[in-house]
Amino acid sequence: MSCKELVELITEYLEGTLPEEARGRFDLHLSFCRACREYVEQMRLTIRSLGKLSEETMPAGAKNQLLELFHDWKKS
Image 1 (tube, rainbow, N blue to C red):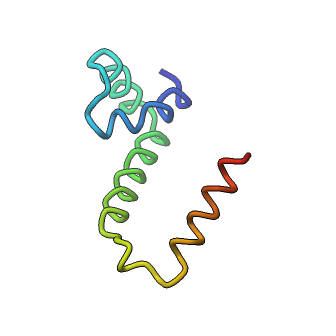
Image 2: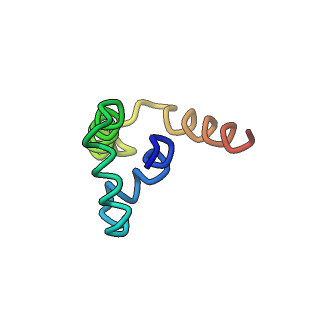
Image 3: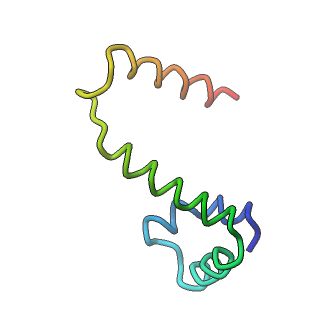
């Protein structure tokens, strides 16, 4: 598995929905690729951090700013 493939499969991996064969290849890649191990840990930290956010805890206007950014990103 390449680093690019790992990045494409990270969501399924973290959600536990990656098929067993692909998960084995994913884990094997992690065993020798430090950069991807760090990436997986960064994603886990991001998920944990974002899980604590709610609409009520967001600063005023942040929701609209995020929606605009996503809208602009989708256009690209």
